[in-house]
Amino acid sequence: MTFKGFQERKFKTADGIDINYGTNFSQDDQSDRQVVVLNYGLVCNVAHWKYQIPFLDSHQYKVIYHDYRFHFKSGKTSHIADLNFENISSDMNQLLDELNIESAIHIGHSMGVNTTLDFCRRNPDQVKGMVLISGTVLPPQDVLFDTNWMEILQPILEQLLERYPKLYKKIWATTHFNPLITRLVHRGGFNTKNVPIPFVEHYLKKIGELSPEIFFQLLKEMKNHDIISRLETIRTPALIMGGDKDQVIPNFLQDILINQLPNATMYVIKDGSHVPQVDFPETVNERIKIFIDSLS
Image: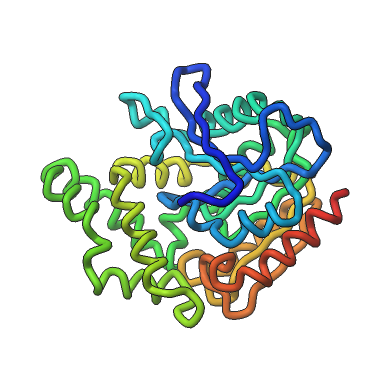
């Protein structure tokens, strides 16, 4: 997905990986406009910010979106274990150095909440504020759809991938052709009245472009992430957002963030799903702008 007024580029990290990113400003832009970094979720893509990117651009913020290592137009190593939160934080840090950005506001959705929090606790002076949407600092295996079914199912799925890799990857890559799966994802993850089926089809198609190993590796990273024990030390201003109809990450889990982060406020989106920024973009955009402007 491309956005009017944005240019995509790549830069090479210290360990030799090309990271793809897009900006609406040039590298030598020294203006003091607020900088916003967008961090998408688990096997998601930049389309999850399709309504936020043009909105932020129209209000004269500098905007950066990027693909994590192993994702889409970014590069990868030969070891899936190199896809971890420490390296993702390092990549983001190097990207901001590349663009001569000293500090920014980070917006994360779903697993992007984890990457945002991890970056913030490693680089507190570089984060002016955080918007954390529909995330969880508990292992997703324990809370997805308010059950622990993923804890049981994940090892079985990984065994199937190991035993039947070609078949598994073919099914993985073609789920967007299956109308039943499309409708199940639509009902389970989105506000069906506000989000059209083609958006879900695109989402599933983009998932199919990634390898299933990425999904399992990042689930392990989220399970082993120790960020919950560090929340009280993160004093960066934070806006916690979530939909009250989120079936993927039940909204009550946002209470952990609002209770543990010392400088956080909460905004719940009525009838919002796991992706409230797509369900109700005008409402979410307005709240994000109010929060960013409050940091000035």
